[in-house]
Length: 241
Image (cartoon, rainbow, N blue to C red; front, side):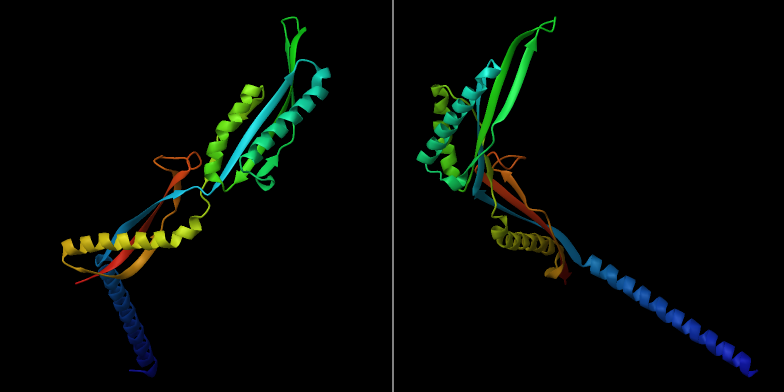
């Protein structure tokens, strides 16, 4: 046999050996992954909290109307008086300047014409708004009734529903995640007990989104002071015999 043939056979043998080694590695890795997959349990852990809103936004809209353009100056003065009455009521009931924001006065004009396009009526309206943003959540509920009493004084008021918000989610997240993880392990232990195995460490974990809803409601998170906070985690545990 020539030296060239011997070199070719040596190279061929080395190539086959490397191929067998690689095939053995991938077969072994596949068996290992399959074994790992068989010896795990994926469970979900739930954590819930009942919390109270700590911030509220409340808007009061007031209007003054006239039937001619000449009335606009007097309408403006009347709107200012209404604004001051509302502000005075809010301050008398515990709100301060930093919690009260004044909006601009908007002017609205509507005219009504008959079939001949002759002007038969018109309205000129000034619309103002006052916003309250505060952490005095319970106080807003109490003062809303007092604001409605201004209607009896001839003030056209739209007392908007407050928007109650919970802004301290980051403060309760760590405890809720710990609770959800603990509940997931309880579920895994029940599964493992039925299977005759033990629960080991965590292989992987996925944190679900935090949901804030009005207490007892399926959707919406601003209508009620009481809120429900919910999170579900998905955790895969190793199982050991």
